[in-house]
Length: 280
Image (cartoon, rainbow, N blue to C red):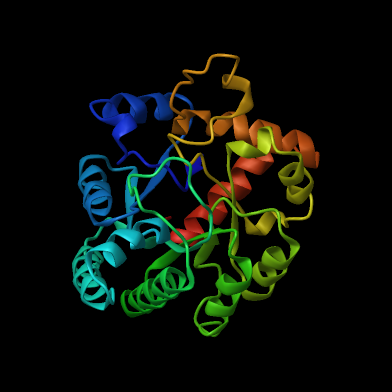
């Protein structure tokens, strides 16, 4: 199987990366992509990919972390230029298969390292600037794209439409795709994969949504250490970190919902993932 989105570069896995990858292998997870969310985590994703043959990296600036650049610079432009130069350097690494995760985000996070975090139009415009610049880098270096969108569908699709002739042919994925028919219709028209995670095991809207997603567009993710499948949540408030080994639980759940054999689902999603990232 192929976990197309797993944050082995997050603090939850410090000192445990080798163990977690070994657990994944034992569960039949043979390939993993580790996306960056800021410059530091992008560099760490590359470092991890260098250590393990079956692990690949994506590098990029998540829209949430654009706030740090805005906070450090009134216009944001100087900070953006510096960050993009560093991301561009990482894109030349042989194990970097994508830029991501990148996108737009209007969600107010209860937990954030930014004490003055707020969402206003100037912040969203800077997010859009980062998104455009990173799309352009992906095109320049012929990398796939991992898109993040949260509660910003209108702005997100309008921004992507500017690049509609280039964002196509199954080289992009809507990571942890919101259950939104407009997003799905756009993805179908432009040949963009739909990423599905462990939250499908407890969100009824996503369970209905998955029934409308063509199998040829589906890839599986854990978004570890986040979105632990419901089978492992229990009543304990101190829940364990999600791991790529739990991808099997997600596959089993989806296969039952859409009425196909899990072996068929696994085969198709592995093929789709290889196509997305150009990994044979």
